[in-house]
Length: 596
Image (cartoon, rainbow, N blue to C red; front, side):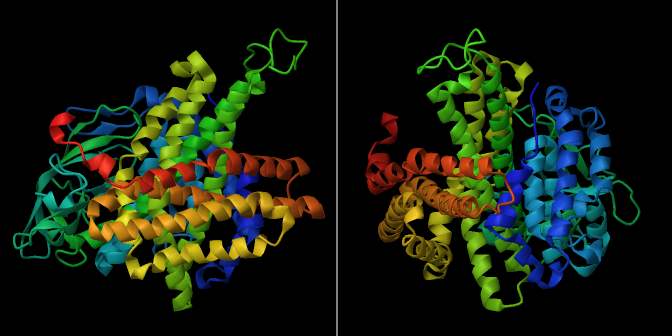
């Protein structure tokens, strides 16, 4: 049976010793968000993830969701009880606006919770996760009456939310949407169309489900400029009578996330209301999607964490052969496989990724809090730029690596990993969707190169490049940091070269930008991880020297050893990504279609 223990020591190390999360208490809404509050909240969060959500993860996968003849969907055994416990604990309200019943805590704390929830039970986490995105869209763009009607119930978790974008003929290309909205003349609209792949579209966890639906008004211009956003509840918010035009046509039979209902949603003259301005729906939906993309990044991290933990436990327990350098456990018939270099490489890949990604994710989350709440407009803009830049990088890289680490966990387990009993094959299946939904990782790469790179004449890039350059200049003078700063500096220099080359060639031929995009995103992510690992190494060195660290001596020594692995075994990937990127588009585009 699989295991999961919330990595609280690592979480606290990043929050308090590396990033000084307490500085968020200086922002106007977060005066009470000191360590005395943060740590107990996260400790309680760890308990609910370990004791309530994780025990129903494997059984939920095996049972899945069931659609009945009347269109209703039931979730697996234990999910209703777990969801009620989750809501009673206030976890749906953690970072929500106090004006609508939320706790008003930093989004950073919600990000930490997302990591632990996704590690404990990926499918379960999607239900409150989608509600969070629905809440964000209505909070930002909804009319006052819509906020009053929907937000308090979304905050308590009594109601849940969804996002309805994809249709049978269009996914990424939202300009092809055909769902229509006819004006009733009384402030409401009739919504008609079919949406597919709607996560949590129908279920039995909440008394109402609030659908946010992209549709076209009769006078809508072609393409994405003609998309509007509508709120379409399953039950009318004032009377709780059924919105008869809303129905679940089917649930998908899919590779993973079996305990989350992925639905075909049919709208047949369903009652709805416009959210925001006509034909401005894409802007509103992107508020929801950006929140979702950060959530999906945490899914990648969470699944990697739990897969890594199970791989380590198995490697310490499984006896096979003797160490290449001599017997390590003479009292046993063979040595545990953790003595073997190749097994250690797989484990260290998981360890180095999860710990580095955690630091990068929390740094991004703190920027999100500053972008939302800083009272200095300049600081607010800087933070907004940084999280906008990091979002596609984290979504793309974290989810790619979530799949990698999950597959490595299966490999460590050998044949047992391929068998359902050990639980790690589920992580491979669950992890795979995170690379696809909320914009495939190829789309994230195009967003980075096509939008974020050029935005503000490189302003977003400077929000990252400048602090990295400053860190390299300052710590380059520290002989103890040479081992970490030098490889970071070399990788950073090549990232700057890649940036210039991609921008220059992409202006002349868009295929050049497209061909470079995935390599560039991956190269950027590795440099960002290197920046975080260099900072963690700096803290670990300081704590070992002073002896006043919050963690044990062994903890800081392991940080340095893992940092060494990252810089020597993982960061070199950035170099071959650079070489691949510099080869340009010709190797990809020269072949005629008939030759494939």
